[in-house]
Image 1 (cartoon, rainbow, N blue to C red):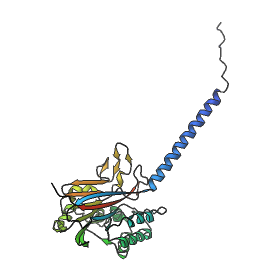
Image 2 (cartoon, rainbow, N blue to C red):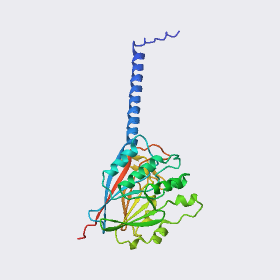
Image 3 (cartoon, one colour):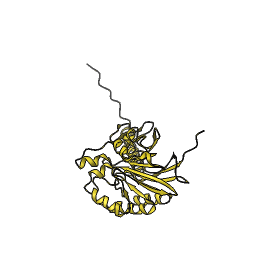
Image 4 (cartoon, helix red, strand yellow):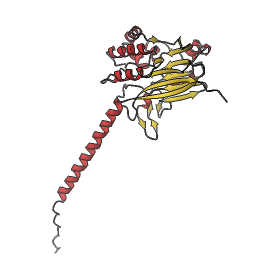
Amino acid sequence: MSAPLSVAPRRAGTGRARGQRLVVGALVAALVLLLGAGWLLWDNRRLVVTEQAVEVAATPEGGLRIAHVSDLHAADHGDFQDRLAAEIEQRDVDLVALTGDLIDMRTTELGPVLDLAEHLSAVAPTFFVLGNHEGDSALREELLAGLEDAGVTILRDEVTRLEIRGTEVTVAGLEDRRVAVVDGRTPAQPAAVLDRLALESAPGPTVLLAHRPEFLAQYADRGADVILSGHAHGGQVRLPLIGPLFAPHQGWFPALTEGVHRQGDTAMVISRGLGNSVVGVRVNNPRELVVVDLLQESPQG
């Protein structure tokens, strides 16, 4: 006959202690999630200003300062556009470059964007090129008419010149290839357009506005001293020790998402952009206004 089973009595308070640990763990997890969400919201709403210096021959006396505004996507949360305009106004810029995707393909109201454009054109000569989202927008023609009324110069595979402190400055602009696709035309290669514009003959510094940075090889060494681009949104998510995660038309771990990149005699300055589109959240990648200083080239020696 087997001996009866001996069952140790449950220690008093064991179940209660386990429940308390679960509650504490849940509270800690909730706090971490709350802090993470708060940081993400703050990081997506803040505006950083990045200054980039590029040496260029024959710049005007004192250099040439450009406010590079890219990929706004009609962002208008709170006072964001007012803060953006104030930052540009206090920087004493010579030019404002709007390098595409000023609106989003889903934008239905142009008023805030056109008010911003009018404000900026009162600060300094302002130039605009179409991005891929303007190409897909039903409001494209209305936007272009509104920008012209606001005093903005629109460059559609065109070049213009102006004088700044006694130096002739050339500004050229390429419209995004998406515009041609939507209109039923075959997009021209950027290199072919630039060859037609013959920027090499410009006597002073030449600035090229071109939305997409992935065509750097076609832009380079065709007469532009500096190219201003955006489109990549900084890679949308920027991972510590790794960098940008993904950019349209470049794919995973893209190379051209921010900063200054050189090829031959050409420098490209890429903005991380000021708004969001299909992917509505940035991670470790705040909205960026880029201020570009073109400085007199140092003598070689």
